[in-house]
Amino acid sequence: MAAFNLNRVPIILYAAVFLIVLLGIVQQVFVTYVGIETPLKDLRHFSLDHETNLGAWFSSMVMLCIAGLSGLIGVMERHSKQPQNWLYWMGLAVGFLYMSVDENIGIHEVTINPLREAFDLSGPLYFAWVIPGMILAATVGLVYLRFLARLPRRFAVLFVLSGTIYLSGALGFEMLGASFAGSVGYDALGYKIFYTLEETCELIGLTTFLSALLAYLGEVHGYATITFQRTAKAGYLKSGK
Image (cartoon, rainbow, N blue to C red; front, top):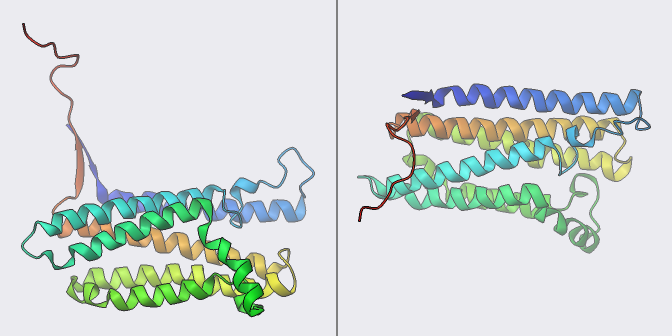
């Protein structure tokens, strides 16, 4: 019987984040000093500033895993002696499932031009989707205060920390980068620095949250390993006559 310790997963995830960010930086250096007139073009799939790239795929997969684990924890806690938080867990599952889809198809981006034109937005609000994003983040934070208060303190701190890191990238550095994109252009060095920091924070925040969920699953619910067992016999079962 083989067993895989879930405590090893964060190490793999953080290593993947480091590799993705490193490749993103290499892509920018390559475009700056070599150019795009090569068989490799602009190495777009390693860029951190596109939706259809390695970083976006990784983020989407982590969000999907978070959605699945949150749903699993919600089901387990609904049938436990303390079911108060199960609806909050299911809310996280639905929310991260939506975020996973959005990461791939960019639903939030359709709000940028209408809001920008309607309110003549510029500067930090040039990427206008951050306005509904901030409202949503604040609303979810307020709604989940009771949820956090019921959690073991260690996990409440980890969840808040991971959310803060993620939002500092998704909203904070996004707004700083928008200032350069709207005034100087997307080729500005400032914009490139801030979108790199933005994606890095998002990846670290998501990875920290998924790691905290795995620890919660192990410490609170006792699921710390996945076991694989070979059956004694392989083949098809035949019905008797």
